Length: 408
Image (cartoon, rainbow, N blue to C red; front, side, top):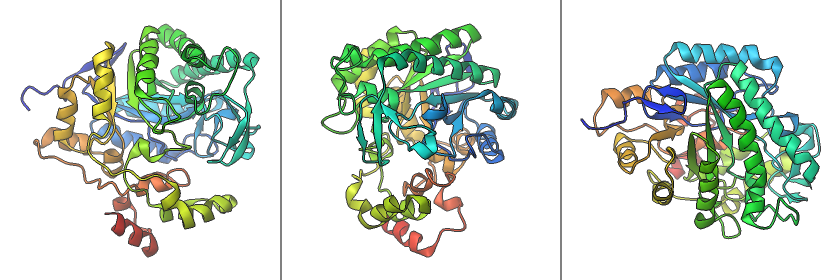
């Protein structure tokens, strides 16, 4: 490990990072009424104390209609002082701080988003479930400008970096994927057309980040995780276009939350835990998940560095910095990824289990490993309650522990 770059500095665009590890933008579910909370601040400060180079606040909606959960953030002037309180506290611990911005598209309800859900195309989203209105061409330039306005708010709140979410089946991804984009205008059909809305959003963000010396990274799907979605050859072309637009890095991910959620995270999702934490107002989904979840949700075995083979295909084709995310739980796995030429790493579950994990990596040796054992309890509850590791939670009912023990 003497020649490892793990604890060497890196310059991400205009932002200096003290090492190569970033807390990824995994949804914390620690907001309230679309605003930050003390719990959100405490968690990100703990991760900064724990040694990461940068921590990323997850999924901040660019406008009111972009929200899919009440515990998400909505970037608006009213919450700038609360966000500034978080960024100042993180900076005081020596870490940079980023924020992920996005639009959920068809993955919401009218009573959450405050409007009829919109997407790339008109239809029905079984995952929510809800009917969806396809966005009109005239709406898209204005919607792209909302991304730029969100970046401006993030700057005023003290953030160093923006992560533009263009993956996982959210709105930008819905335009990119042939699974959700059935349009017959200039925003549908060919890959060039399907990239048009993404390009508009990147350009709006890039204009603001360049003005304020902020970093801009894009979270991009290497593949959607099913046959009718984006596959790797087409995804490489999208990544080349992202690179041409002058972003500072790409986060390489995969999966489509509304169709292949565990392709994103891997592991055996505890469906009884998922149903248990769902609110009663969602009782139809709660009942369906309780009874049929383990058959409805495709399960994936966890293996360390599970995206690495695909990510290496992108490393061969791109010159800009690439950020690897996916199954990093040990020093050995981290060194393996760095050895393949990836400049930066993102992790979440290891830091949910132990916010001090990076400090332990620095103090340990090649055998250092996270205590996360991939039961994915944290993921099962994160859309209904704050994200927490089962090993750090004292109020888990025995009926849920039974399922968790079976998964292990």
